[in-house]
Image 1 (cartoon, one colour):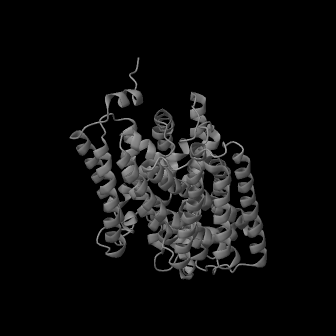
Image 2 (cartoon, rainbow, N blue to C red):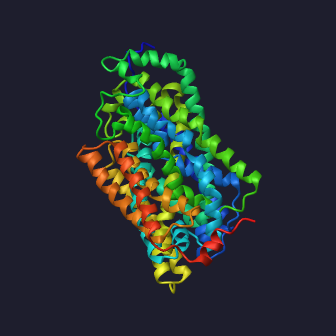
Length: 523
């Protein structure tokens, strides 16, 4: 292939549409079956078991579901689009997350989340936090904060699914997305937390396989990184810039600071460390986990790394480079999907219809699994952490039916937003929500598991500051373009940390009885 003669956008064919549709149908049918099977494991009419199961889910299923909740639509589509758009420098943002990623989450949050939720009798993460600090007010504030950020993040999942459907069939995404969210609603309603966990586990295992296969195959197909670099260098006008690890010529304000300055690059590992631990849809995967033995713990770590480790880094980062070699800037002209088409178009270019079909299935698995995990939490935020908390006389049956409705509502709202006004660059839009969640909950959740001196006021003001700064910083980064995304991350994390520790140091800790229960003295 001549490195400066690029392919145009691959027009979908009937064959692509047929096989892609069959692949997605198989994925959705298996998810429904898992939902039906899980229904038998949940006591009929039990709101607690609907929310958290019997707390006996093993490390393999937990690990696969955790990887699926983390490997969202942006991991399969958005991050590849970043590298496609800016070259090697985009790998700081698109690739480093999988090296840090979920292993710290397992180290710091897995056992503690399961342990605290059992000791406190909590069925949701906000309830665990609220009871950890003996504060109903904090529980509700945390639930509403999560609701805000998770709604933002959920939009990106559907845009990713819509983009790959368009690349495969050329048809409007509306019908496929409607079918997908209906399937997600069905298995969440049927099996509750258990059904969601099992469906996500299947989807996680599948997308891990597809991601590794496509990432490794694309590098081999392109002739290795030396050939990739040589061909990128030959691109007219910007070729030499595409192989730089930092691009100082790009603006140092806005999202491009992550690629153009040390401030942004150094912020990148902080972003992914905090969000992996602070993501509520990640940490909630441990609420229904059984007690782990030492062997079970290392099984969990191994499963997570095999799915969400280096193979996925290759898929997310190197695929963007290979797509740029193949398509040049042509995909940027296809609106509104633009760079987010890089991964699905690459799949077809290097593997034809079979690889495109697998990619379509993997992308839908990534988008649906993360969306399901988030929507289930959003529903519980309202039912358990607001209504049931303040009006305990409401029956479990009423809460179950309300939960079914809220799951449908929280699936439909991001679907409508995606169709009417999709975010321009998937990974940056979702990155803002991810940064806010990570900066807040790495302290409010993870640090609170280990520091007895943490107080409800420290946690409360951290939530308020992090939410307010996310709104203000997002405005400054995306609309005013007065600060860079890396600077915004430092404002978030340092500010949340100072507030959390300082306010906790000058306010009263929870009761000694509670702390002794949660932090038993070591013999």
